[in-house]
Structures are given as structure tokens and as C-alpha cells.
Image (cartoon, rainbow, N blue to C red; front, top):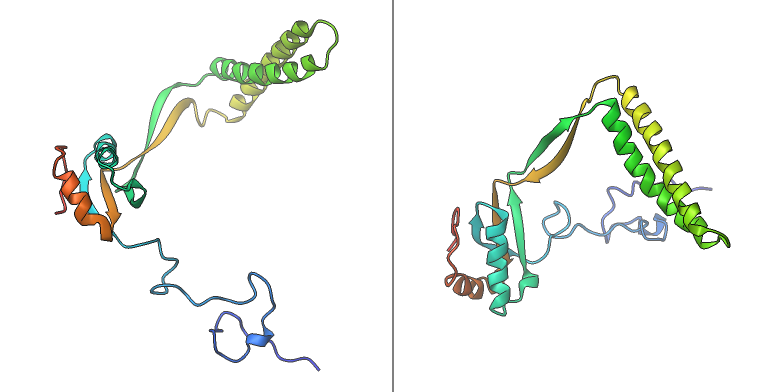
Length: 194
């Protein structure tokens, strides 16, 4: 005779049915920590200043470190993140082949070095052959890959994340000490939290 299965999603510690749960790392659900809205992120922290750019926030943390503040209790938090894709240039089949040749040459050099280690004869020739073959195949694959896009992405670009402001936070129990140290530093702050 089998026992009816119970839902493990509604089970809480101390409720009947605990013996029905399988043993193992995922077998016994733990009660939610904190307020029940996910894992706690660590100790409570306080913002001691916000800055318009990352180098200013970095200088603030560096100033704390220079004054023997325990910087392992600090964090730089970027807010209002924006993804910026900077267009670097037009991509043609020739440029795609050239970029592929460069990548292929590095791979061919690596393979040539591996084979060159175990070659009793002229190991430099093995390395050069690997480099040339890698460049040729890289150029072919680069040109084919670009041609297969059908002109939908005829440019190269680089993506980066940027924040509109950067906050320096410290653990709440160390905030007074951090503010005293920061009082001796003059940086352009977007908004100081004192």
C-alpha cells in the first residue's frame, strides 16, 4: 500500500509530512531567510556618498584604504545602468576574412607549437605551417560567416555598461568612522549622504 504524496512546496518545518520528503540537498526545504523575499545580501549597509563617475567612487574607496579603513566592508554600487553599443566601423567580407585570418593564425600558432614540441626535426617549420594553415582557414570561415548574415549586421561594435551615478556603501556599524575619514577628502559628489 502506498501513501499519498504530499506537496513539498507548501511544507514548512514542524509540519506533518516531513518524513515523506526524500533525503538529500534538495529534499528538505529550509525556511525562507529574512523577510521571505529571497536570500539576504549580507549585513546592513549605509551609503556614505554618491559620485557622478566611477573614478571618483574608486578614489573615495582608495582614500578609505589609505586611512586604514577595512575596505572589505565597502562596495561601489552603480545605479541606472545603460547599455551603450559603440559602432567601430563598417564590416565587409574582406574585413571579416581579415579578422578571421588573425584569429585563425593565433589558433594555428597554438597547434603548431603543440606539434612542434613533439617534432624531432625542424620544429620552426611546423610552427610556421600551423600559423599559415590557421590563417587561411580562419579567413575562409570568417568570410563565409559574414556572407551568411545576409547583410543584417554590416558593422562592428563594442558594448559596455554605464551607470548614471555610483554610490559608495559601507557596513552600517562602520559608517561613522567612514564618514569621518571621508570628511577629509574633496571629490565631486553628486549627492552626499551625511
